[in-house]
Image 1: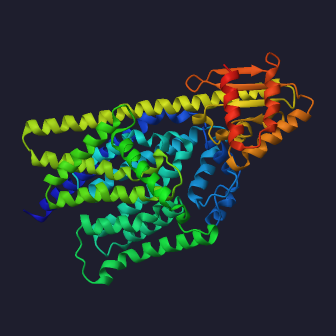
Image 2 (image 1 turned 45 degrees about the horizontal axis):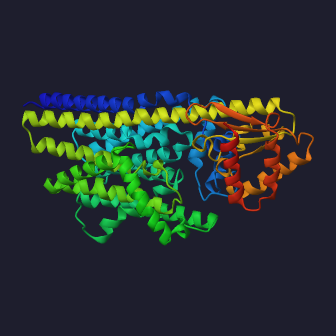
Image 3 (image 1 turned 90 degrees about the horizontal axis):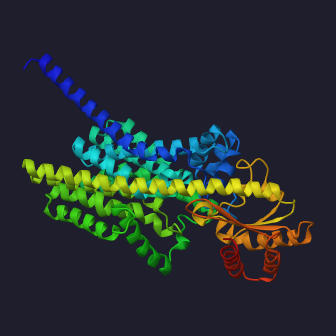
Length: 537
């Protein structure tokens, strides 16, 4: 074969590979974007009000300040131990579409999810050495997982999809460096820079060194060689991690919330671990537990029958990746589906490895057709669950918007100084007050015109809620509008508002004044909830 012929053929192979990569990336990106298009106009919910209100008001010059202080200031009644300059500046940028408009906020979330899907494709292709169809399956499984809805459809969910983007990008760059050889330092440098950004996006990315070492030892099966040869590539990553943790210690007095580690936390972690695994594997429906068990058993069965190479890859992207990804939940302090956003990458790739191994093990046409149908069934299962979950988030956002409109109308029509008892659904307005009734979400602060109280879960600041609630009741009782009160409650499915007014129900003012005599926060919270339930129908 002449040199010119070999060159032409190599060019054809390269063109074909680039074409396959472009098609696979486009398919995965579209699968990530299309299901979330209905969420682009979803209104703010829960933490969104406080986060957007705070960060959209910060000047552009504030960015360096977030490298040595908490990005949330004191808006939750305490200072969170979170150094997150890159998510903070992202909210500044998406607020440019209008401080009270959710569209750009949602658009960035969806694009981040699509980018993560393409990165999962790259990890499956480069690190797991899957074929293009297998890698595409991994990307599709990841973007269609219903468990990710909170990370994408909820504006504040960006705090998990964004660090995952830089984490995966750093991992892909490191893998490229390993494949290209030590001379390709640009890929190694890129990995370090991306890891730096990941660290200052969220603290759960400190697990990177374990991810890189596991890949080298299990997937690439590097020869240990000399200790220097083994450890040298990890030294800069370890140094960055150590420096970041030292900074956290200086600012917050703890390295990684190690004060939260106790017997109770370990017990709760075991429960959360099981719940998260179930939701990732099988979604959130009536048969999730059975489907999760069957899914895990299927992958384990493939692992038992796999050769050494596929078996080690399944170990890495299965239990090891999951363990590394889920470990930060130990000190998270609460449970949320978005906490498994990064851990779910391993499940998506493990599923693709299992399907590709099955296809290679049973090459007969009928077997391959059955495997193709099974893979489509898995994708269909996830797609249906995702559509249901996105609709549910749309309902939550719609109720939130209606609550803002109704509360604004009530506050503007009542006499100044009146009392408003707010009973918005917790899943729409948890941690939302008072930010939901202040600019930029309303033109003027409603709590400057009327006194607003609510159950504790709706307050931004649980530690201040009791004293703030009692102070609001006292101001109302001493004011000129002390006989004007209204209680509002919204249906969590339809957003329909029900109300009880003192003009029609004089006992409302008597009951509210009696709240001043309650001395315990738990009792006050329970009484408020009972009042809303019994009086407002």
